[in-house]
Length: 233
Image 1 (cartoon, rainbow, N blue to C red):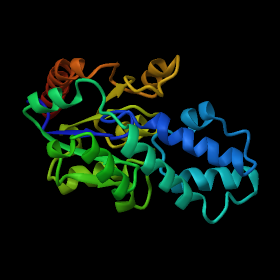
Image 2: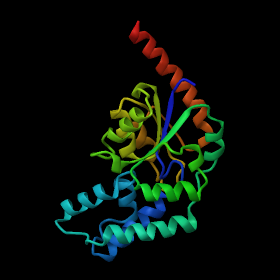
Image 3: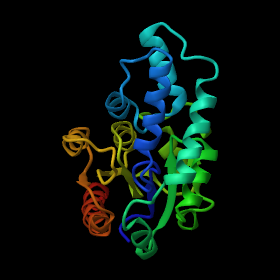
């Protein structure tokens, strides 16, 4: 394979969880008087962002606390929704099975949520034990820290990594890390114009199905390899 490591986001890339989680966020915020943060607004701004960073941003913008129990309440509701309704993205399992490249997950989700999501959908087997949460680094996405941590832990240089990301924050993080980034729009949360937004942020390609990813890994990897060869010569 032209890459040594495939780094996958979880929510919205492997599992169709973003709408479930963001709906809970929006409902809890509305119940607490933060009515400006609708589902679409939460999806647009905070998909791919850690809960801690979302809360910090909202409290800075509004000058109000979301409540000391907000994170606990949201986490409980999201876990219940994931256990009951979560599904893997179509063709993710079959594609992961077929790809002859090392794989890991690097997600803004908590370790507990990652464990639940990957176990419920049967995808954990393709990544265990290489599953990285943003709690491992000081700065979450859109900072590159998590992707760089995952690559370093697996002994792979950034320019030999390919990232699959559905969020603006994730694409920014992958580009900042110096990795090849495939934007993914196959999740139910991806609204009109999302593909164009990911491309504008620097994604090297954008797809809406896992069936397209093996071809893109080959094409983007070979292009990247040619550039590295020219640069090193």
